[in-house]
Amino acid sequence: MNNPVTSIKLVLLGEVAVGKSSIVLRFVSNDFAENKEPTIGAAFLTQRVNINEHTIKFEIWDTAGQERFASLAPMYYRNAQAALVVYDVTKPQSFIKARHWVKELHEQASKDIIIALVGNKIDMLDEDPTERKVAREEGEKLAQEENLLFFETSAKTGANVNEVFLKIGENVPLKQAADGSNNGSGLNVRRDNGWIWQTRLIQPRKPLTVAAESLVVLITKVHISFPERFRTEYGGVAAWAVNLCKTVSWNQP
Ligand SMILES: Nc1nc2c(ncn2[C@@H]2O[C@H](COP(=O)(O)OP(=O)(O)O)[C@@H](O)[C@H]2O)c(=O)[nH]1
Ligand SMILES: [Mg+2]
Image 1 (cartoon, rainbow, N blue to C red):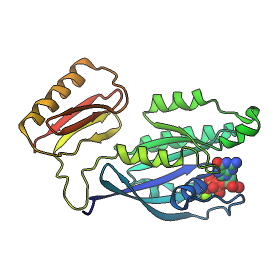
Image 2: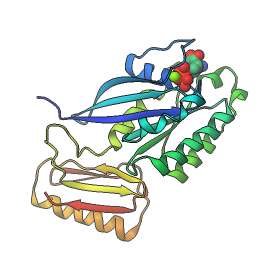
Image 3: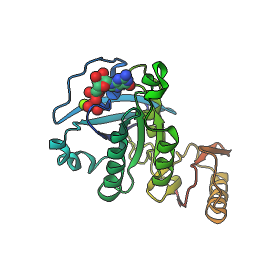
Image 4: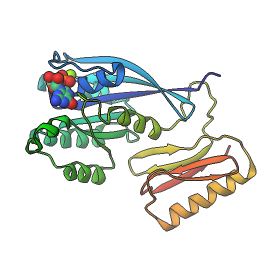
């Protein structure tokens, strides 16, 4: 059986030498190069992963961090559905730069864009914990304030790298599935900054509507902060709601 395929255009942004290209290399080839040649302009790579019987094809634009290329960035993030904003946990300046990228994305990119904030090079802390110059809490705080996914990674050891992409894959709506197997019906859970999750209709049965509507009422009326990927199963349908969702809509099948 062929899985439905969803393409996700993803862009990497961040100061030069934080490890953007290395994160991509780890994700795409499970490899690492100690002295990587800097990226000139931008590089394009693709990688497929399977998530819940769905194939996600990541179309990755890896940009160069040098200032002289920064003016080209809008070309890459303009139609992106996802962005990784990367900093180096040993370089405070790179965290400041990451803040700027987040701000720019919120102002200029698609409002549905899913942004992951990524603090890279955590392997350097294993050798010497005093190397850490950006506290994990600082990253978490920014992520919380700006509605970002947050990870600390090492492209060198591979720690958490796949997780970043899997999480993005899980969070991008599946509505643009290429083969039409997802027709846009289902439960949409939305945050202020855009679509976070859309359930896939597994079996259109009556109880589905009931379950979904109760969930909608619960979320919109009560404004509960749900545990991440809070999950209910009812009538053969799985619905996921995401932490602190604000608006929920229901597309009738
Ligand atoms: N220790 C360590 N070094 C890394 C890591 N990621 C990248 N590097 C190194 O940092 C330098 C810059 O990496 P690169 O991927 O070119 O950064 P980019 O300019 O953001 O694309 C290279 O020498 C990499 O080998 C990491 O997770 N840990
Ligand atoms: Mg690079």
